[in-house]
Length: 249
Image 1: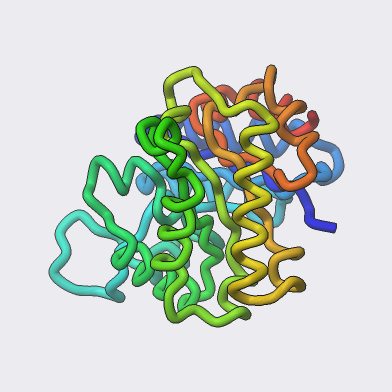
Image 2 (image 1 turned 90 degrees about the vertical axis):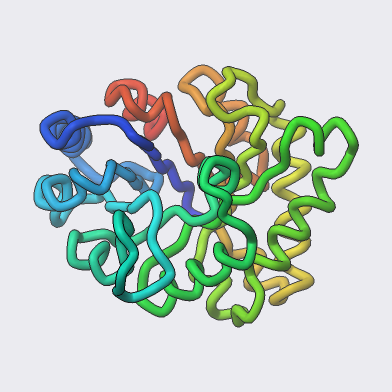
């Protein structure tokens, strides 16, 4: 059985002090580790400070991005080694905002996945379609292409070490969300695709998260879908009480 994952992506929000306060409150909210795997992705500036707060706890520290090179003249970028040094165990790769706002294509996302895996970081690999693509019934075609190109040259063992997040681009930050049935259908397609790519055992073990305007109000319906193994949560993860509610849902 796949353990549920509740991951909070804070994006470009929270100062170091605000991040530390959130992590402190989150850690104190549970006397024993909760059922789901809990992941938070603060901004880069707060990673080290948050790592100190959550050290030895049930909370995993995640980065929002990395560069595919180990080091070099890449102004403003962060390497896998730097993330490990800051205390990260996982990293978000291929988020729709990186694809659309920063022009990251499937080839580069593939290189980032290979870099993260080689460094021992667990990638949360994001895929998803735009509103136009959904309206033109291209969802499965688009996602299959993202999976094929993004996972190129990765072994079944490599793929088994990552999580996948389905994030319909049209539902991110818009207040819209796919219905549980719509999301479940896409998650089932992703799992079937992974099964063809690396085998039924690999597909059955991989966590597939939903990331499209998840809130405390809609999370129960989404998580009731058997193919949805958790959430990659944006705006609703910024409020600690909201995030705690979603962990306990």
